Image (tube, rainbow, N blue to C red; front, top):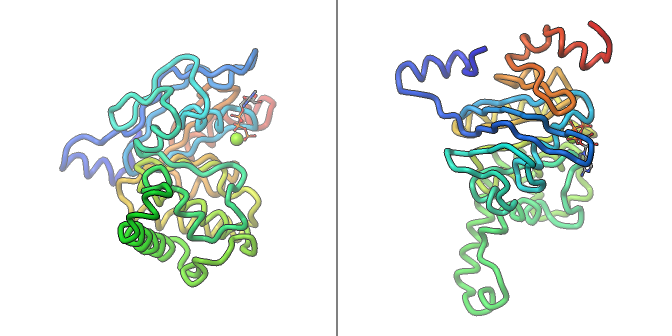
Amino acid sequence: MDILTRSQSAKIRSSGTPQIVLKARNVVRRFGGVVALNNLDLDVVEGQILGLIGPNGSGKTTFFNVLTGIYAADEGAISFLEKEITNLPAPQVFRSGIARTFQRARVCLSLSVFDNIVLGDHPRLQQGLVFNLFRRSSFRREYEECVERVRELLEMFAPHLVAKMFEPVETFPMIDRRRIEVCRALFSSPRLLLLDEPSAGMTHEETRLLVDEIVALRTKRHKLSIIIVEHEMDLISRITDRCVVLNFGSKICEGTYDEIASDRNVQEAYLGVEA
Ligand SMILES: Nc1ncnc2c1ncn2[C@@H]1O[C@H](COP(=O)(O)OP(=O)(O)OP(=O)(O)O)[C@@H](O)[C@H]1O
Ligand SMILES: [Mg+2]
């Protein structure tokens, strides 16, 4: 199928070719005898939301881990914004413009909303005792800029948290912790955002709200591409432009949600029997 949405196709006809921001080719990752990723090819188009789905253990999180430098690929190549990023260390991948959230919420409960979000860009912040002691005006300026950037992000994604910016995260419900995680990932102004099961641990109503917020996000950041891993098919059907389905580490189908949902191989992979 065509990997462009209709509006993107129209835009391209008038203004040139679409940009494929992420290109993964023949990516293989093994854990002992388990082939977690098996010759995976995957493209992400600028501004699109790609759903990465598949049964438990099919390799979705492994793909994020290989992409972000947590695990090395055994074979294959990945390029991002036309630069080779295969097996770069995690901080370098991050600096190239890829940020992520994790399958299990990873917020520091005793830290404030502000601290949790600013941690999302710590490699780029000025650090160190000497800097903080002797360049106090620069430090203060940087701090004030951070407060402003966090405020802007919260206003966009979780306005009710602006007033609670300096409160510890531990008293907040799961949906707010997820929102904070998303803001932390967005704090570094990434071009590609990886969301690993953002609905995990949330109620249906919370999931619905989060979906609406992600949809609103894309209208504010046109160049941001997103890969979302999710088991909630309702969520996937509502927000993705395209889906890639994995089973035992291999891509078994690719297309719009309607296309993959009606595919026989996909039905069999999910049901574990002949559809
Ligand atoms: N660090 C590891 N050591 C050994 N095996 C691993 C490791 N990480 C992943 N695997 C294996 O790789 C395969 C893919 O796992 P992965 O976590 O990527 O699946 P997933 O699609 O994210 O599943 P889920 O939907 O349950 O999160 C599984 O067989 C898993 O056991
Ligand atoms: Mg996973």
